[in-house]
Structure formats: structure tokens, C-alpha cells
Length: 238
Image (cartoon, rainbow, N blue to C red; front, side, top):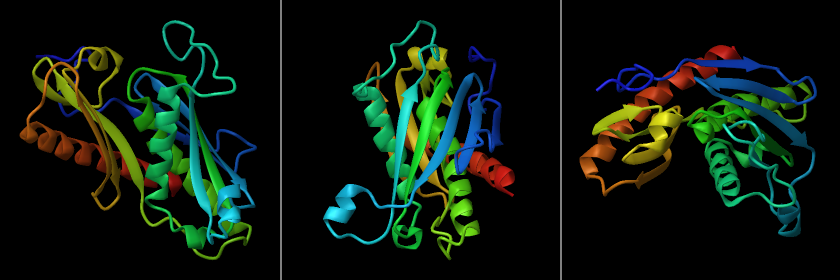
């Protein structure tokens, strides 16, 4: 069955990444995955987070903040004020874990890098786009630290990217857009490192339980998709 976008089951949406989109941030990337557009900015603090200082820990830290602008979706979403909604908080933690999985905190020194991922327009896969574009912003910020002589070695050990996959109309598909996501029988997100290993797998049977062989197939599809995303990351970082 043809997907609403007329894509093949393993076909991703068009992807582009534009770097240095924000002149103030130490690293920035505007990523577009189909109709999903996310502005990712990386900011450097020359101090460790307070909890590390209190515990007398060595090394730096990487964290992330995710939010969706009011008209990123079809109807206006109220701005997040003092407290994030549960979804944004959960996604922020996911993104932070993804970045920390590929960073050597000791080599980062006593610096904190915060990656802000602001969804300008949402059409499915916003957390995955945030991880993929946010990595580029982080890599640029690390490059800035090295250029400034604040660190000697690159603390980034590998790339990391993310993509969604799921079961729609009885078919296993890659990179769900909003229409597919709304009617998916199974929805999953995969965070994959440059060496092909999985950092995180999130999978939910939306309509009914799923079989083990289905998740294995989706993992392979996601691995192939993230490989293509990582190739694009490396191209824009050259």
C-alpha cells in the first residue's frame, strides 16, 4: 500500500542541515526532515553544572532542552513557562542521553554544553530531528572550544543520529510523518551511534502488541537510515 507521502517503506523524507544559522551560539544547525524543521543551538558555559561541583566531580557535562514553538503544529500550543510539559521534559532527557553517550566528559574539561532544540514546524519525528541536528550543533561548539584553546582533544567519540520507524497499515515503514504517526499500529524511535550500535530504543504497540521479528526488522531499517543521516552530518561538518 502506498504511504500518504508516496514514499517506499524504507524511504526517508528529504533531509537538509544548515550550519551556523545563529550568529551568537557557539554551534548551530537548522535541520529539516520533510515538514519537520528544528533549530538546534549549542551554548557553552565555562563551569560545570552545580551538582557536579557540589559532588566534587571531574569533567564536563552535556545537556539538552527541547521545546515546541506555539505554531509548530496545526493549532496554537501554549508556550512553556516555568515548567515544561511532561512530553518536552521526557524528550529533553532523551536528547541529552543521546549526546552524552558519545562524549568523553573528562576530555570536555570543566565545561557545560547545552543544546537547545526548538521545533519551528512539526510533521512527525521531532525528537529524532533534534538528536540528529543537535549533534551537529554540539560538534561545532566543541570545534569552537578547541579553536579557542580551551580543550586540547576532541571529546566527541562518535556521531549519533535518530530516526523513527513503525507499523502502518500492516507495513513496516521508516521515518514516519505526522499523518502516519497518528494512525500507526506501532511507533518507535531509534538512536544509533556512528559505529552502528544502538543508544536507545523506544517502541510502543499503539493498537496491539508487536512481535519480536518486527522490532528486529525495524532496528535494521533504522540502522540503515541513521547511517545515511550520519553521512550527511559529516558532509556539513567538513
